[in-house]
Length: 317
Image 1 (cartoon, one colour):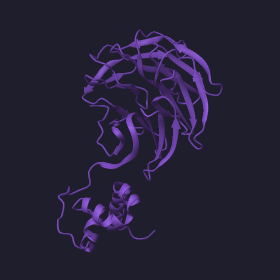
Image 2: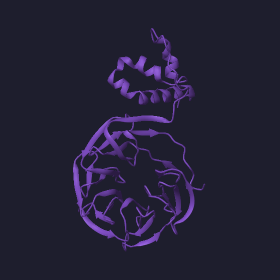
Image 3: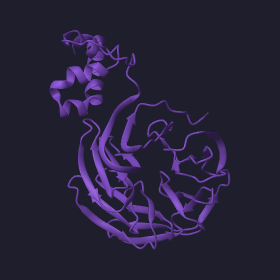
C-alpha cells in the first residue's frame, strides 16, 4: 500500500459532499456548477476554496455557512406528503411511501430515483434480504414488490379496514400487518396466505415490529400503550401503560432486550422482558442502529426525504 495522505482523503470526502449536495444543480445545468454550486458551498469547503478564484465577474459573495451541515442530500421529485421512509438492509436503497399513491426507490449513492411502485400506500418496509418491499395500503391490502424488477409479486388480502403498517419477520418468511380493524395479521409470503391473527387490541393499531428471534411482535395501538404479542399463541403477553398520548411507532433493539416507543408526549425505552420504563426523551421517530443498539431519529418531510448524519443516544442513558 502507498503512503497514507490525509489531505487527499479530506479532499475526496469534500468533493463527495459537494456532488451529493449540488446534484440537482449539476444534473439540470452542469455549466452553472461554478456559479450555482460553488457560491452555495460552505466557506471552508476545499472544492470552493480551490475553485472559487476561477469564477469570473463575481461582484457579490453570498453569506454561507463555514462548514458542511449534517445534511447529506435531499431526494427530490415527490408530489405530495411522505408518510414513511426506510433504508434497505444493505443501506444502498431508500424506499419512501407517499400520499401520491406511490412507493419510490432511491439510490443512496447517487440520490437518483430507481423505481416506482404504484398503489394506495401508507408505509413501506424492506425484507431482511432487501429483495422485496411490502407496502401497507389503504385499500385493505399489503402488496409485495420485487426491488430488482419493480414488479408486484403478491397481494395479501384479509384486512377489513385500512392497513397502517407492515413488518417482515427476521427470517423473511412472514409479514405482520396492522390495521384500523384492531388486529395484527401474520402472512406466509411464499403462499400469500394468512398465517395467523394476533388479537387483544381494542383500538386502531399504528405500528408493529418483530423481535430479533421472531417470537414476539410489539404493537402500538391508539390506546397509549405498547403491547407485546406471542406469535405462536396469538395472544398479548405484556402491556405497557406509560404513555399519555398516541404512540407513533415501536421497535426492538438488535439484541431484543429493549423496546423503543416514541409518541406525541415523549419517547420511552422499555425493558422487553417486563415492559418497565428505562428512560424517556423528546424524540417522536426513532430507530435502533444495527451494530450498537444506539438510537437515531427517522425523519420524513414535505415533498422530500432528508438523509442526514445525526448524533445518537446510547441505550444506557
